[in-house]
Image 1: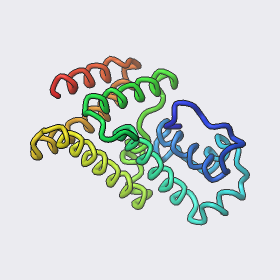
Image 2: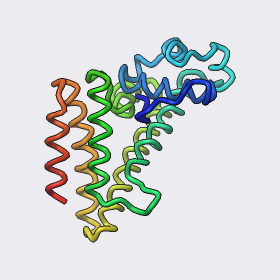
Image 3: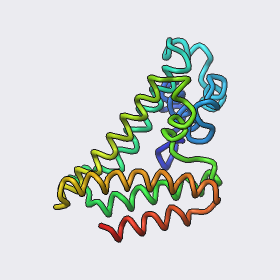
Length: 194
């Protein structure tokens, strides 16, 4: 899943970045089991030697780097250069991002961390641990947004967990149903709760 809405020209980024971006994309479309070195090389057009140069730990190191990058990119949707976003604004950004991602990929792409969590924990414990940390980080980040807007701490924590779980679940349902309706419904309901 190339998390940015507009892809960067290949000449402007390093082969390492291209490989990480491709791994993020493949995690989001194929899951951990389907994210292979050959697939990443084909998608990124990086030379084979780049894998061993940039990722001496091989596939697990590449997927671990991709998990970190995916987490950072998603966290950016909950931030603003002008200060904290309003929780409704953050929800709207997440909804727009996933709606665009789903429709432009013909419902083949979801969250790369879900793909890693579902089928990567036995194969790649380090990458799965990063996925766990990222999900917790998103919950904490959203909790802090809510708390900054006068939601009491215990309620903010509960709403943050609900938000992350509902959005991730809605993306899975949207892929299965080939419709953004589940995502739209979840964003509308969460917005109403705020």
